[in-house]
Length: 144
Image (cartoon, rainbow, N blue to C red):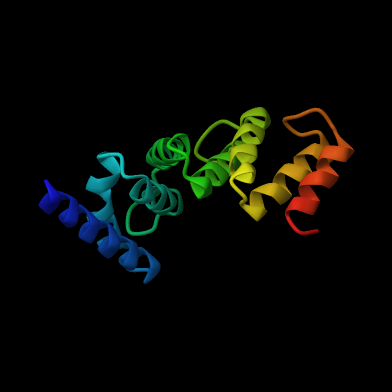
């Protein structure tokens, strides 16, 4: 059992290193099988590569699928990424209400970028009822 886990950890860390080093085709080959097996760190990076056409042809469906899986598993950056997809209508139909939900989940995990975006959504009344007090509260949490 531990051998397969160690092998998976090695594949994941090698895949992440390739991703960080911008060796995207290697990252895709290492992370793709892990992403298919539900490894959230692999799913998040595969989503980014599929969305940006890094190491592969742009694949909006794959980007959305992996971003959503990682987000649902609690990955804060994926929650932010999914919120962004919904907000901008990238890889999925624009839906400010769903965007708000995912930014809020990431914001509650302490992601400053999500806290700022959430504050902006409250300020503008996008995807949520306009609420200047809530906007102010989230801007303060984000350090503004």
